[in-house]
Amino acid sequence: MNKCNRNRRRELGYFLLFIGMSLAGVSVFVLIPFADVIRRSFMTVMSGEFAGLDNYRTVIGNQAFRLAVGNTLHFVGVAIPLLVVISLAAALVLSRIRDIRVIKSLYLFPMALPTATVVIVWRMFFYRQDFGSLVVSYLWKNTGYTIVLWLAGIAGIPNELVEAARVDGANGLQCLLFVKLPCLKGSVYTIVILSFLNSMKIYREAYLVGGSYPGRDIYLLQHTFNNWYVNLEFDKMAAASVMVAGVLFVFILLFQHYSQR
Amino acid sequence: MGIKRFLRMASEAVTKFIFIAAGIVICAPVFLVVTGSVMGQGDLYECLAPVFQQGTGFVSWKLIPQYPTVENYIHLLFYSPEFFVLFWNSAKLVSLILLGQMFVGVPAAWAFATYRVRGKNVIFTIYVVLMLLPFQVTMLSSYLTLDSMSLLNTHWAVILPAVFGTFPIFVIYGGFRSLPIALIEAARIDGAGELRIFWLLGIGLGKGGILSALVLGFLEYWNMIEQPFAFLEDKTLWPLSLYLPEISWTQAGSAFAASVVMLVPAVFVFVMGQDYLEQGIVYSGLKG
Image 1 (spheres, rainbow over the protein chains, first blue to last red):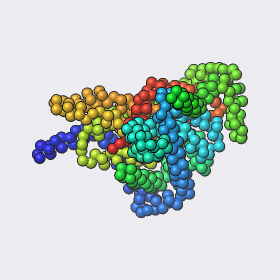
Image 2: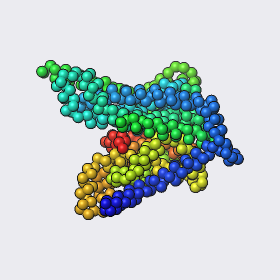
Image 3: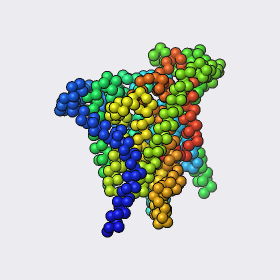
Image 4: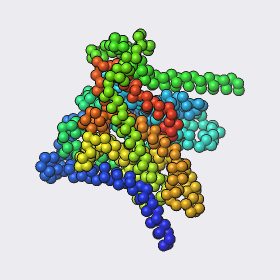
């Protein structure tokens, strides 16, 4: 009993030793400052008086913020499902072909291209700056990444399972629907999370093509934050940061809970 | 049997061909940038006319320029000293960020991978959330911190927050997870100290994850836009990724040439590190 306890304390000690630097840095640069931002979100920016929920009310009533939230949700809601489905289809086909190294390279290549390099091309073809072109450039950049993730998931499906289904007389479609897809459920969590992470980076394209005030359809949440930042409207920024972080946090907890059941 | 096998091979070849053709289309922007960089003023103006006029009609492009020229490169490399400053800014920022990330992230990933501690899952979840927060959401808190440390408008304002980013930890952790636990147990029974085990097994055998994190990190930070834009006012401190879009259309030639120069290191890392890139993507698939 005693030995067990000591062992546990020893493990905790080493855990903290190894993670210490990261934990300290994260606290100093993100966690503590963010706690301060939460405090600020209830204050007026000038006099520092307690303002209750005023900042939140202002932000929620703000036209630009509403437009940006709508557009961002629209983008995430359209682009992520498209990306996930297209790359799953491609991965299912590719998993049955040998020697796909060259193909993977071609599809991953856009990841290596700096946005600033490609923007010059985007500006040539997408000078209309519409929603569609944003979705296309997201798919263009991330399809390879997502195909690789799906391929890893597909490689993890036990072969015996598929063989057994075949022996029992399942055709290709049945194999796909009742054997392969259920096995891939575990990959969905990862893939959606990472696709979301990358979907936030689309702001680079939107900003570099359209600047701070792009077309109405592609005015994203990040634009709002950026413009508030430039105008030093920190009270609005604080309230909006807290709301976005809160929504994301709850979303991730729910998603984690749901996908690990 | 013979016919069936032939049919299967034929269908495989056709599928492959379709995928490769689509892949070449996907990579087309690079050809445009490269051909643009060797076009003279006249050629470029002709091709880009619709952009200048903001009108409708598509940009036309010549796959092979009529009069290829290196004047754009000469102009860029010999007559624009500011270009070099920006290039070195980029190189400095990226290398210091990656160095710091390894210094901080490798031990942190090791802690997640080897020790069973209560509360580990909570920290893990917090790190996932931090990874997913868009830069803009933490922009204000970063600004306030950097301001209080008087680091704004210095390269450290971009480097330090990135060093403590949590994404590389998950990639490196993925590499460590592929090490057999039994190996670590065996080393412990043989009396190796924890630090020694970390050094020999973690860094020695878990190199794959570390290199993967470096490749992914390079591609990410070579492409950094938001952070320097928010925290660096002085344009001589800017990285290339932020400066390129500032070049106006009237200097399209230089813009194309600068794009190619910016492209070269990224393509080099991509080609050399493709296996690690793929592995890193797989590792980034976070499994708690």
